[in-house]
Each structure stands twice: as C-alpha cells, then as structure tokens.
Image (cartoon, rainbow, N blue to C red; front, side, top):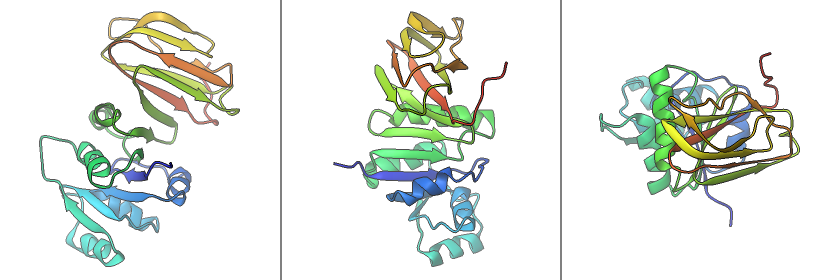
Length: 220
C-alpha cells in the first residue's frame, strides 16, 4: 500500500529548483509552515494547511491564503520549533507516513540543527527527509540501504549529532568498519559513492545521511 505523502515548506531560505514542484506533483498533502505558506502561494501552490505561530504571516496574507482554500492550524507552543510542530501535525493529524521538508536547512545554523533534531525525533514514525538545493538528509535508525543507478559517483556524508558508535558504511570510497564517528571522533563527511548500492549500519547515537544531488561534485 502506498504511504500517504506530505510535503512541507518551512520559512527558511528556499531555492526553487523544481524539486518541490516535482514532489507536490506526486500528490498528497501540502503544508506551509508560517511564512512558508506565503511562499507557496507566491509559487502558485496552495497549501491545504498552514501551521506555526503565525508571526510571519500578515493579516492580508492570511486572508489571501484562506481565500485560496488554506486552513490555519495554529500551534502556539513556544517551547517547540515550528517544524517540530508541523511534523507532529503531518504525522498525527494528517496521517502522513512519507514526509519531505523543504526550506529548513539553508538558513540560520540554529534553525538547521533544530530541523535535523526534529526529523530524528519523528523519524521512527514516518519516512522523513530534508531536501535543499545541495542534497537530501534522512535519519538512520539501525540500518539503511539505498540503491539506484544514479548513485555511483555522488557525494554522501554521515552527520552525527553527538557520538555514534559501531558505524559500518559500504559502497563508498572510504568505508567504515565498526568505527565511532562524531564529536571528538573521526569525521564522515564528503565521501564518494562507488557502487549502485550503499549500506549504513550504526549502533547507539543519532545519525543522518546526507546524499548530494547528482549535480554536486566533491571539492578537490
């Protein structure tokens, strides 16, 4: 059975390179996070729902969104970032089990880190990914295998939030074999894929894999 999809546009910097539109064209639910909803409308896309505390949406913009058919779901909890609340809504209320987030990882560092934490927090209940102009990040829980004829030659990084133990990484130029990565340990960024399948296996710790888009090339 096909998983219900949701696409979220957050209110961070966003490059309209066609990836968001391609995702929306696949169907599913479209959610704008605060000012991200205004940007969707400017792109000619109408979100079904608008989440967030509303501090980046003017009264006129809200009226335009509501006139277009968007429904506001106010989430005013100031102890949680807007994306965390948007993911809770998409998973718990909309029933999404496949969620792509745009506009969350190319702006302020604190916002980017908060977005990664939110994806790790909710990633066991749905397939989550953060997409930006450079690549796509998704959490790794235990083991992850990615396959495709377009993988060979692309750049891939493992991002440890803290310390991650017993990491195995296959199908890359510099494999890992039961090593520890992260704070105070070895780095695992800017590796090169050398096969049509890559496998990551990890023990304790919070880990994301960041796969660069095909056009990305490793800096020499």
